[in-house]
Every structure is written in structure tokens, then in C-alpha cells.
Image (cartoon, rainbow, N blue to C red):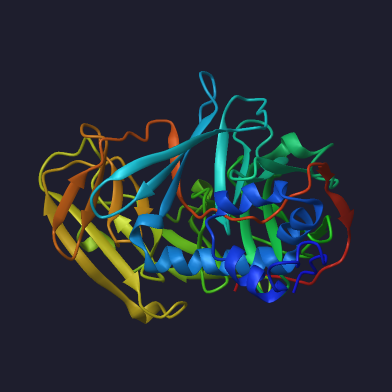
Length: 401
């Protein structure tokens, strides 16, 4: 437990003070940092931050009114304002706005993921995956992580595709990044990924390390923002066009064993056309995917949800829902806490649809050139300094199997 000076302890026993303050909302806790130097150190201590975060997560689970979404603009020509939204069963209300404190050379950004109140972003232009930001919107603090590996400087432009993932390592209490870089050999199509380079970054150590011999030959990872299930980052993938194999499948990266794995989709095209794309999502803690007709398709509209009941077991895929509707959809944003799927439509903006009750509601919000993600406020602290990713050649072999 964090140590508090005798002056701070004069009227309140240390353990009682710890219990009381760690139960308060994040903004209230922030005000107490100005009480004294001892209070500032107390609230900044790792023990307090961990306790406050765990209780914030518990409150978020128990109280619908505390569930938040973060609305992040992906095109930054006009503004850099993010909005924290409170999502409940009745409405989605704006709580407050916060400016993105970092600059993006391309004036576009890509949302990678969010864990424990930290949001990961990268430039969506040339700097994609080369300049990565980890940001705490509540504290207005961020780290800028610049890749300095041999592949990120001299050869970076030659990589035809870069994929970034972000997660929290519970065992080591560490926030980590993975960067997968596909390389097109001279004389081959840019989509023929004969070479790949995979590296992992630890915020605790400040080092990038290469995962030796990781190969994803002939594969295109299509989804930028991965799903995260059971310690694995998961993307939708395709074979390269030159392979003459046209089928979707799943690539997962186990963050504990650092192994890649391929998994198959079920035969959903029995119910949908070959043009429809499966969007990977997380539904009630399980890997799921959503399929709907393209916005311009004519005829009957069918929204389907398939769920993998046991992660990694292909036979456990089931078609959970198959709903006929007249509402065209652009793409799914994800599921909210109430297990409603948030869908960006062409006409009405964002709607929330509950497959169990068959009820939908219009949120009167639009997601054009924006991205939403589940978000929880936290006091997880980030030093205000530039972090230049150092290079360290350590690691283990990892293959897709």
C-alpha cells in the first residue's frame, strides 16, 4: 500500500483513506492531487492506481450509466476533438470533449485499441505503425513510440502493408504492441507477401524485440483493429490474389506463447453472397463475426451473427442470429455493454440493435470519418516524454500453424 506522510495521516488512518479515495470517480480523485505533495505521491503510486482501476472496472460492469464510448475522429483536417459518450439503455449522451494532443503528419489517424483507459493510435498515412501513440484521455498525457528497427527506417517504404496490435499483459502488468510488416519481393506482386517481419514492444522495458522466423507467406491481413479474446489478437485475413485461392480465414496471435494460428470461418456464404464481408467482433466474451449485405445490394437484407462458443474450436461455430431487415448497413462498430450491436447506416446514422429482443433504437449520432471504441476512465499514468523504441534482438521462433 502507498505510504502517506504523518501530516496526511493526521485525521484519517492510512488504510481508511486508501479505501475511500480509491472508490471515487476518476475526476474526483484528480482534484485531490492538488491537496499536498504527499497526496499527489499517494494518488500517483502504482498500488493506488491498480486498486482504483479495478474498482472502476467493477463499477463499469455493475452500473450501465458508467459505460463509456470514445468517439475518435479519423480525419483531422477540421478538428481534433474526441468525445467521451455515456452509453445506456435509453440514450447515448455526450459527457465531455478532449482534444487529441498529438499531431499526425497525414492528418488522419487509425485507432488500434484501448485497454484500462489507455488508447492506442497511429498515423494512418505513411507513418502507419512507425509512429504510435499511447494516450490517457482523462489525464491528457501520452507516449510517442517511434520504431527504430532496421525495417522502419531504410526499408520502411518497401513494406506493402503494416498491421499494429495493442494489449495489456496481465501477468507482467505491462502494455505491449505488436507490429507485423509484410514485404513484397522485387519481381512479385505487391500483394504476394513472401516475407514478413514481426516485432513486439514493451512499455515497461522500452524495447522492440523481433520474433525470429515469424512467417505469414502469401497472406493479407484485412482488418486493422483486431479483436482480443482469451489473450489472443485476432484479424480477418485473405490469401494474396496471386495464390488463386479466394477465401476468408482468421489469423490469431497468442500474446502468451507468441505463436500465430490460422482458424477457419464456418460456411456462412450458404446464407450470404460471395461479396459480403465478415466483421470480427467480441460478443458476450466470445469471438463472433457479423455479416450483412452491402449497402447498395438489392433484395432481402439479412444480418447474421455467428459465435465461436469455445475459442479455437472450429466445430463450436454456431449461427446465433439471422435477422431479416429492410435497413441497409455500412459497417458494424461493435457491441455495447447491453449486447446491442452498433451499426453505421447510410441514412439514419448509428443504430443500436438487440438481436435477442429484436428492438432497435436510433442514437442520432454519426460515425462518418470517426471511430468508436469501448472506453473506461483510469488513472494509469504515462510519463510526459518521447519514447524512442530501442532495438533488442531477443525472442523466440513463431510460426503460423
